[in-house]
Image (cartoon, rainbow, N blue to C red; front, side, top):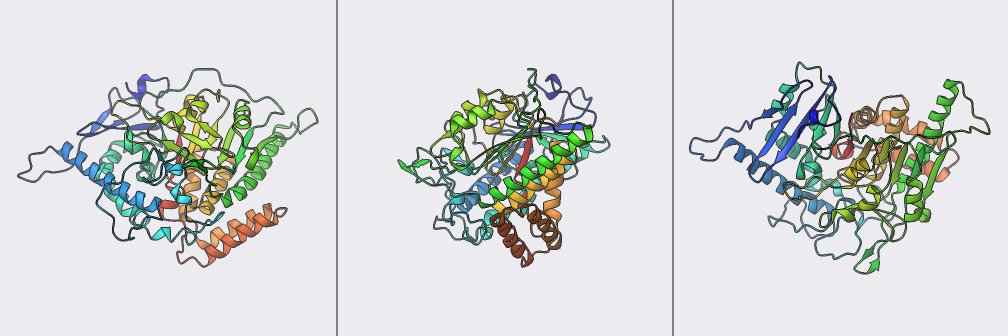
Length: 479
């Protein structure tokens, strides 16, 4: 199958890149608008004179070696309690746990639920790298840019870029395969607006989209559930996401201001029969499975979730978002919903884009693909957990960009570009504006002021330039 055969034809300013992993090769296809057949990007590795192996096999072996190194470094980063030096990684491959991502656990822990090691060892509500055991010093963080540069060479990104030249391409559809789903491939295509698809067979559902009636909530905001999944038969409190409350509070204000202005521009001022756009807000202990399922089944434009999630590599159908207490919203629960009114699902507080290494023929199955299969147009998710404060900054800026009118993929790219290029002074000024929006919430205002102080003393002129802070965010769905 190819993308042109699907119901979603490629626009004249859009190209697609599809990677395929077989047992002994990594093949890259570039699909240009109007092209009858895809372009196959050959390996650029030149074997030594006595090398018997083919360039494609050498490329595949380089990929496997790279991935093993990435996995080992990430395993160490995700388990701060492990007795490992920061500058040296064991050559013994880590044993995978059933749960990966925000719900990942150490291999030694048997669970009925799951908890992220990224939240172990930190103080409840903590958000700074200092509180997380100087995690910025771990190899996975310090070597990320170098590792991604090496991956760029292995994937032959320069050759891919050459095929895109002279075609006036603005948008790229990235279609990874297997473990490539876990990596920020958009990092290599900074000149394009990128979206992801879960598989080459993906196509837009032809079912009629639900409509939002006047007076119905347009934004479903589910925030900071008090999750206590079972670990070894005992309930374990997941550490709260402190800045998620700030994020949700500002997004509420941005959304109401945005939709109120839309009503004013259209000339339809709010009345008792047609009130201001409302927000369906569920938080803390109220985030039960019954309440979330009931709310999701109602038509909304956007579902924004700030909480924990997990990918179950042993049983993908049990991948889930953690709700209040022991409740979970599983992949199977999501697929059985009708989400055709939802233009955007935002799971930016949890590592919901990750996947395990399944068999060659298996389609990628995860929470993102479940939301798309249920009818949602776009899904924003993260490949790893970003520090809470930086995540909140990016998400607030994303909604402010979205308010200006671009499609979600362009708004996300603009927010990422802003975060990775903003200077200390620009961030301090930006935070001052957001603090003013929280004048009625002194506790949240104090949190932002504390973040201002941290940025002011940051030794980096561009505090969030490192890809750790912004490259984790992906958007799936067609452009």
